[in-house]
Image (tube, one colour):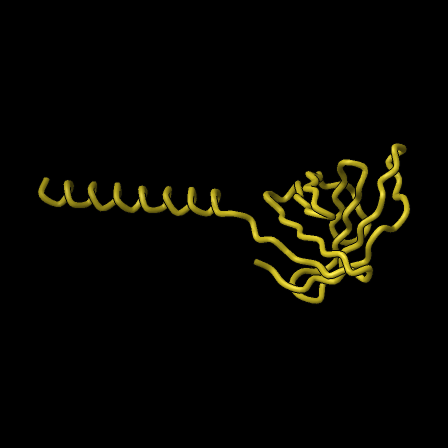
Length: 117
């Protein structure tokens, strides 16, 4: 009996600590990647979860959903398409118009990742 109470207490504290760590990881703000584009524009992209991207471009924020790609990660939404290849500084991102027939349209920006915050 004397050993049971301390073990129960220790187990409860350990489980509480694990649950708190998972909550902190889930509520942490996603990292934002900043891209410098050939045109002089900048694009900031964050990935709140594996299936979505949030892009800031020309003063507007766009919500995008993952789409099928042959290579890299492709996100589509609001008439735009963001295609990213690689990760971290030096990785490449291209912004296209996205056509109503679900095809890739005109290239709008070609960018290189400068930093992450």
